[in-house]
Length: 143
Image (cartoon, rainbow, N blue to C red):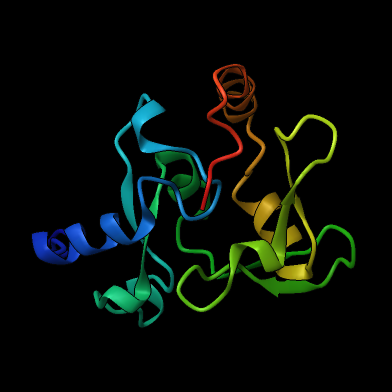
């Protein structure tokens, strides 16, 4: 048996709430070569629900890297930390753009650093896309 399909109304709500951006890496759906997905912040395998409060809009790469993780090791402290939860946390409290090129996401907190590392928020393709979007004044994205 496959996993349950998220109702279209719920999917529409999650997409609209994200304003066209991955809630983890801030990639914009309009520039993505892959369809975006609906991510379970807490996966069903760990008792997560299909409710909008447990769903995030994610690019294919972030969703693939996150898989069923809810925690990861903070590379700075080597301690386990919860991954970023876009429903209950503010992106700007945990991440910033690097001050030189604005193409890399830096983690400010254990959650931010663990999320950058686990979801590979600075994948080479994302860095290239961010550089190209800077050239046309579309990066960093406005919240």
